[in-house]
Image 1 (cartoon, helix red, strand yellow):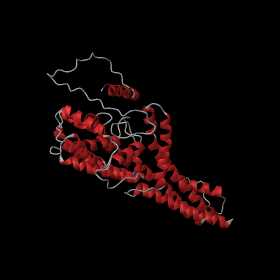
Image 2 (spheres, rainbow, N blue to C red):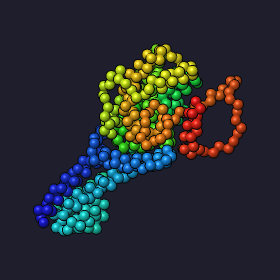
Image 3 (cartoon, one colour):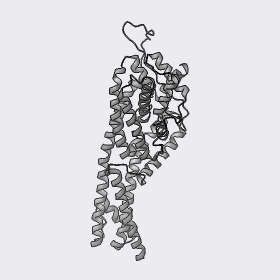
Image 4 (tube, rainbow, N blue to C red):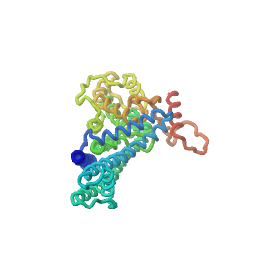
Length: 395
């Protein structure tokens, strides 16, 4: 019996050490924690919620369920650490306290939660009791201090994503960014726009690779997403450089570079593979017909096009090959909303939604006749999807 107890003692020490290492790597160390137990636990919780979401019919319900996945993963992670430490200290206290294994678990829980109602009183076990109490307090305190860091990074991420609604529609699309800025004569604002998104990409790359659970936090609005927003901005920059190279701001090139670096850093943190140096001539998933249609639409809006479609396509493909596969895989894994040019979502039987462009109303300019005033009734997420799908069919 004593030999078995000391075998458990060694296993308990290893379990406590592994738990402490996991906590430090996840909550304290400011770098990618790697593919450890915590990362796999988060992925398992996400996969469970994703399986449930795919069984639902309405996208609104799918999004609502998936929004619970990241908070549930954090609570499960905390429970895993506490349970592992509690079991580890129970195995340590079993031979030291001279009691049964059940009594050792009781003493371990009493010490970790600083209750102090079950102590053996032996000198050797007193040291373990103090260390267990310190571990319990440290895990809880670190987890509590971890949450403000997460939500601060989430808030910074969502600020620019929300601002995209007026610039790129909902859901976002790269061509729509250029079209809207052209229509209202604000192409001169795009340099600062790309500067902001270059900084945003750097911030997201650092925060989401250090704390990968952030990637699973969904935007407050069902049709918003940091993945589709990033793809839209990168597509707009690539379109600008491909269609109008002499007018394209230099910031577009810098934004592209930081953008696909951001996507690759997050892909590394989530265990997604990619080609680090793709050939500019490599094929991409986006069809040429989609690109040509977007080019014609931009020309109708007044966007300055300097290259013929074939030459512009070669240049655009040379940019997009750097981020398309990574962006598509992230959009698929995170079940992002069905935006244009963001790939297929398994389990989401909804066609990509074309963002509705607001009517350009100006004083002295004839426009569509005014509609009679009516009481505004907020639409549900499903109703908004249906409205956009009807608009897509009539385009």
